[in-house]
Length: 156
Image (cartoon, rainbow, N blue to C red):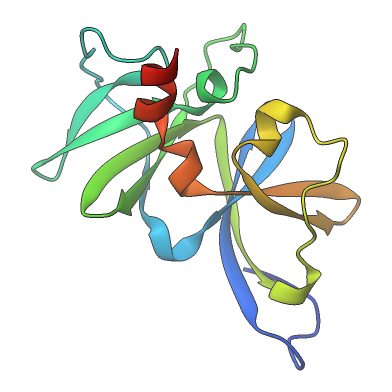
């Protein structure tokens, strides 16, 4: 676990880091239930394009969201095995399909900055702030907004 910041004066926030392309993202650890390589996804007819499918995770139906598609990012050319981060939100199970899962980071809440004005709008719509970590920008994902695919699908 990486600890960034002093920790003496402020509250600490814990994140699981994931990458999509070359971008680092942070998921609040209290929402993360599992990390795994998906074996088989079942397609969902008429689902929004960013719903990769569903799978059975320990007896629970889990909707898997393709984060590259959700963020309107280019799909990878090579077929490297993706990872799924299992999330539970409001009693429902979701999986977030990402390129890779990194480490757990413990960060000073006070070090979180608001979204920069020049942050790509595709990322800004699901970002809950950013951290500058060793010359790299980590975007904190607002999981509620990431999973709000139904409202965007209805608006389209």
